[in-house]
Amino acid sequence: MALLNLKDVSVAYGDNVVLKDFNLNIKKGDLVSLLGPSGCGKTTTLRLIGGFIQANKGKFIFNDKDYTKVPVHKREFGFVFQSYALFPHLSVFDNVAFGLKLRKTPKGEIKKRVMEMLDIVGLADYSKRYPKELSGGQRQRVALARALVIKPDLLLLDEPLSNLDAKLRVKMRVGIRKIQKELNITTVYVTHDQEECFSISDKVAVMNEGVIEHLDTPQNIYDNPKTEFVANFVGFENFIDLSLQSKNEDISTYNSKNGRVFKVKSTNINSNKETIKGAIRPEEIKIVNKGGDNKDENTLDGIVGISTFLGKEYQYMVDTEVGKLLVNGNTNKRYKEGEKVKLYLPKEKMVLV
Amino acid sequence: MKNKANYLLLLPGLILLGLFLFVPLFSTIFQTIRGKEGLTLVKYFDFFKDSYYISIYLRTLKLALITTLIAVMLGFPTAYYISRTNKKVRGLYIMLAVFPLLTSSVVRSFSWMVILGRNGIVNTILLNLNIINEPLKLLYNEFAIVVGLVYLFLPLMIMSLVGVMENIDNDLMEAAESLGASRLKAFIKVIFPLSVPGLIVGSVLVFTGSLTAYTTPQLLGGSNAKVLSTLVYQNAMSLFDWDTASVLATIMILTTLIVTTIINKLSGKLSGKR
Image 1 (cartoon, rainbow over the protein chains, first blue to last red):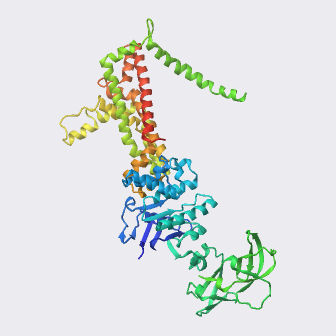
Image 2 (image 1 turned 45 degrees about the horizontal axis):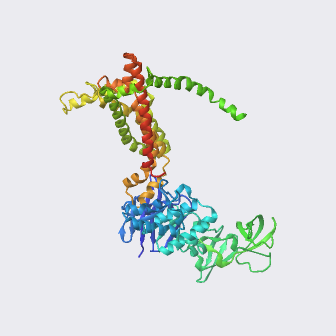
Image 3 (image 1 turned 180 degrees about the horizontal axis):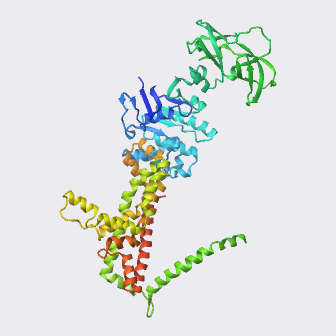
């Protein structure tokens, strides 16, 4: 039984429909990320769960109770804001103690719990400082401590790391995951950063235009995205139009428009449409020597265009019979512009959407 | 060399202030402590011995305080509302709030006379509704002065508060709510302490304004409710008693300074250690 359950929720601002018949279930103890481009409704979903906005339609069930109309301050959810929203007139200690004081917790216990929490986030020596005297990463940790010290039933994080620099982001996300696991607290995490959310989530919901396109483990989304949008969002840069020839349990056969034969693992087929798109990542396409083997299956001929250096690999824009494809090649050899190449698209790496 | 030349830029302003503000001001103050044999405070002792003067002094203080308190109570919610609206509407609201300042204080006082007078709008309505049997005396008393002063100085309070409140992040209110504070609690614990600087500026402006205002008490208070400024005028222009007028003026200045200092001290306590 799910701990959190959004049932057919709709949210609209005037004519602008943000969420439509939205459904989401979250298990206790899981960290679920809402991933998507800006404007996809992920922050709206989080704010709806937090109680800052009301649904026009639908229900929000939490812990078997109807939370749809429960006001924010009665929900017992911890919320970490993108801007951190620390109280500038209070010290670090008082910021963290804010929620406990409202609960009329005895003074001694407040002190104990606040210091414990500051210890967990590594800020025990900063309790007397004011927010403006802290760095971005420290403020972020105060915000996290403030949300966690009330022992919330649910932790909500709204792009908590987007105002930090790249190195600190990596460090902080590991920290957040560690604390989340230690306290075993169910968490909803909103982000637009794919790497960030894949690295720390139990489950990821990729959102687009107010609906969840794909909800699954990071690994499954990365390897086998269910829709074209998800594939595109997680780095499948190449899409080839294919039409079905024969379907088998193990391997299925498709034809490209110009008659090339493509074999694909049947478990990678995510749509029953007759004409379908074959998606593949640039790094999974192999450049093979022209005419090296006579098996024509899963191959395309092309001419190398612009190449760029990515550090680990070169990336080529290859003009093929079915359009331009992005292909990565190792740094042993840099193909020149205008060179003819043969591309091999491994059947287990192609995903049909 | 260049730096010294920069000071020259201050010179016109300094000369203007020196000649036309400091010299008259200090000569006024000096006059009040000059006796037949050297310096003396006897004129001040005389003032504080006179129960008539004392009653006017206390009334002035009282009216200024009441005006400030009412301005705070009316201004705070208004300013909070204005500060939460979006930028476009906010400009319009602020313009509306400031509108009373754009007309002459004489005109404004006359409008209040029309409203509060014996046959004014308020009395006419109350009489027609049979709530009262004879017209209330709403004009030429302390009530009328306070009404006029609040109307006059409320914009200053609203503007000082909006200036501070619009810089308070909206997330702070939501953060407080998510931590278990009701709207009201969140307002008291977060918005209020952060608004204190604006509250102080607004209070000082309203208080000093009310304490020294002349037109409004003169027109709406009449001779029944005299205040310091009208007393100064009466002494100087009607009785030609410039000595007493100077003493009154000096007391007014000192009172303003003292109260301003007290309000500033209080602000430290209201907004916490910062």
